View (cartoon, rainbow, N blue to C red):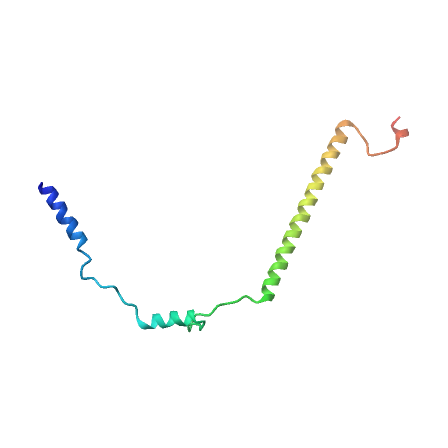
Length: 106
């Protein structure tokens, strides 16, 4: 065997044996009791679920509804203005009038 191969084998052996003698770390016993209390439904001291009151949720829902309604209203008015101005431009370009009076046109 080549010395390079021997050195590689030694290195591989050292890496593979590097974990010998190591022990798995143990968590403190208080951690296990906290986990058991959470699983059994008893809240851990200092950790409580925060809920949002229904009034706050309903106010937020009303605000969102009003904003959406206002947005739709403004967009529909803008579209009507654009359509109306297009018609006015066409009537002025072709010399048309808004009168339905045929006699005046003759």
